[in-house]
Length: 200
Image (cartoon, rainbow, N blue to C red; front, top):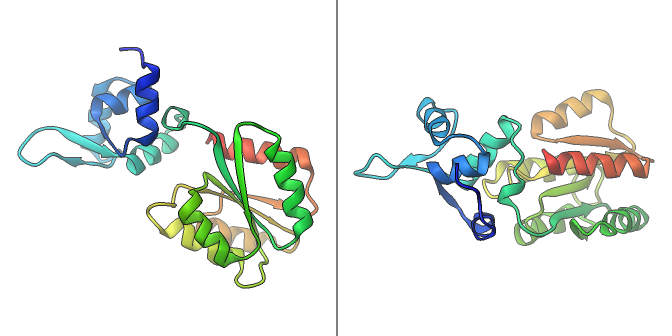
């Protein structure tokens, strides 16, 4: 298999539709494996009208990679974007200070669910650290909206809350939540959770 060049990696960060050959390079598997997965329905995509060529949209490729525990780092360029949503300024300050010290991350914050929605569209975070109790609408609604939109459904959501009970955690998982931390949380635990979710 041909070795990827820096130029290819840069172009993959912005590329929205992949050939089977490009998908194979990104996933570090054979092109035949990609074709088999495509033809069996395990990898979403479409055929070019009037030809035998297959094309794989970025969102379908990312889902396939995550479903098969393939790191998606080859599709990313620059720092990972994290949106911190909490109406407690002290929490926002701590999280942004700790994670902002890591050059791999770029952070923005919001204090309401409404602002979180706007920033999700414009900032396009890879991860949202989301308080469950917000002044305008609860985090479960924010999570549900993020996961229901095609452009943001692959965004990871890490809930932080001091009031979420086990049965509520199960409900949030059904809405697409990817992780939970109970307030007050340990900073080391936060850093590890963020790292694990962004590596997934």
